Structure formats: structure tokens, C-alpha cells
Image (cartoon, helix red, strand yellow):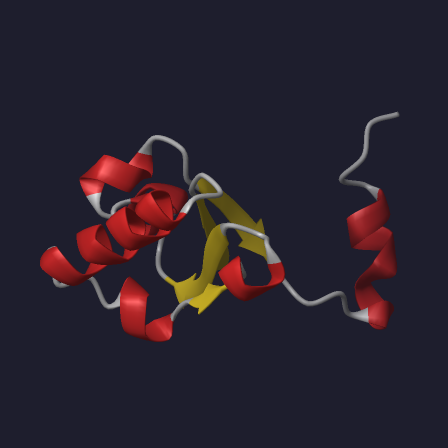
Length: 92
């Protein structure tokens, strides 16, 4: 099953941090309890990795008020035996 990294940014302010956490909490999102937050290092984003069938399904994990600014990136481990496959992903 494909894995996705979901990144949800918010502004660098106490109000924004509090609002972001409040939205995750009020929507019952499992994102809050499973995500890593960078706020203590002045990187105001949260990240979570999920295994779901599609990028759209991964995006739906993010609460609607935060979804617009979220980035959803398909990730996979680089396997040295398959390095040629990865080289072919680039057209330039």
C-alpha cells in the first residue's frame, strides 16, 4: 500500500498554534495524537505518515479547515537494487 507524508503548516504565533491543535482536537482527527509537530524548534508545521490507497484519501485525513494548505507527498524507501527505476522517474 502506498505511504504518504502529510505536512500541515500554520503561522508562527501562539494563536495559530493553539487554533491548529484545537481544530485537530475538535474534529476527532487521529492526526493530533500521531503527528510530529515542529513548533518547539520554530518550524510551525505538523507531519504524519500514513498508508492509504491514494493521495486523495491521505488529504481527507486532514481536517477541512487545514486541508487547503496541507501538502501530501507520496514517499517510499529507496532500494539500491532498484536504483535504475528511480533514475527513470526524471525526464531531464
